[in-house]
Length: 116
Image (tube, rainbow, N blue to C red; front, side, top):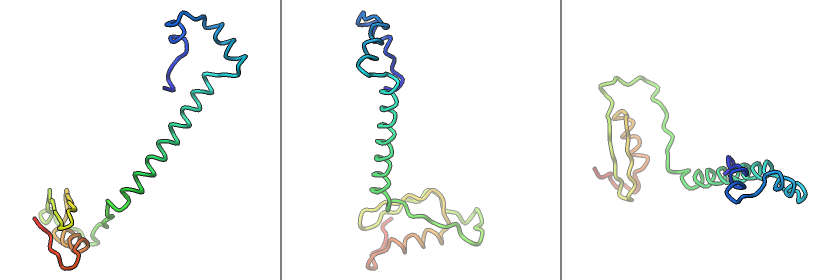
């Protein structure tokens, strides 16, 4: 924990802070440097984790472009869930009928139809 403090730890163990500080200095230890190392290692771990997630889920989300022509609000479909034969489930919060059909055509394989 980078927010940890040495003083409460020493008090619990009835150790003099000044003596411990002197001993740590002699040995070349530093709480400040330890905290910096912890922060760096945690940042690296977060970065590796996010890269792994991005690599694993890179194909999970399909970028869709906004239509060039505006769609009337009454032509929107809301809360659509599509289940494809391969088990892929797609939930669409809001989209036009044209864009939903376009998405279905992108997912369609070997003339297999989408299941409702």
